[in-house]
Length: 348
Ligand code: 5AD
Ligand code: FES
Image (cartoon, rainbow, N blue to C red; front, top):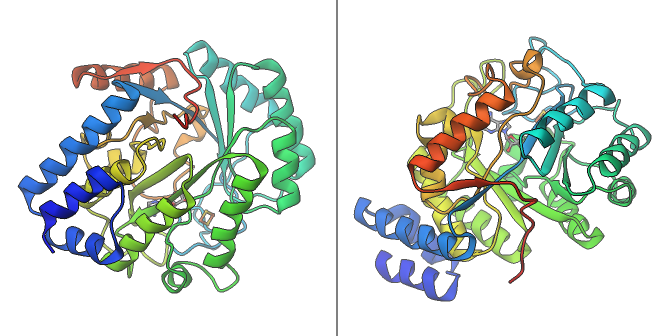
């Protein structure tokens, strides 16, 4: 086995075996990383042509009934400041976002019992009514199949639910006993079956993660073939069990972005805020490694700092308009343009 032939195989066959992926991730040299990066960038330029899609992120609630060990919004974090947006506040974020050119709104929040199907379907159908030209993405954690179906019927188009790690034993070390990796992966199939453009994803460098775990994540994504995949480095949060663990590495995250692009050429791949948080040029580097989506924050400024899933999150002080101008400038400087487009997954 050698790394260059594995990179070649990723380019031509869009796949590799578990053993090859482990070997590649363990042995890749700096010059080979550059070769992989170039191949992934070339692939994304061929498909998306230097166009970067933007998604307006609206963080609707910092309440969460879950207790994921890594997350600053976990229920047991008594220091977390909790807020939830009203329907009017959410609609006002959409209004500002639409004026700024956003054609996708991502409503993200902890698993907050306040947002019942009735409350959520009312919000989704109102956004759908006011903005027929926009995509509505939900990222609200685990809900029943019936609930996900009702939200879809109310007008939601997409759903983000990271699998976090494909290995169920590893999953169990990151989550309380009542959560299950098998259930989580099953829900991703349910989302696809309902008809959502579905987003999976995982953290890079989460506690106890092995290279084999990452190979399994890559193979899980390949098999599920989701329309979107969000990956970002693990970043410790001071009020969680994992406060003393090291953060994930930017290099490894970027390498995985490139492998994901080669294995899933058309997947919508964000350069995440977490990547921008651990590296000053994280998001630009993400784009140069094959990512094609950025998700600027549209949440009301006064609540930004309270949606703290990890420490030192960037962009918590800027207005949405400032954020998008800043990102736009950074992307133009590397030869890419932000586009006003729903940016749907295109199967060909
Ligand atoms: N570091 C990095 N990412 C995190 N997430 C949650 N906590 C952290 C953390 N400490 C990610 C999870 C979740 C998404 C909303 O944020 O992958 O799905
Ligand atoms: Fe809510 Fe982690 S505790 S997503």
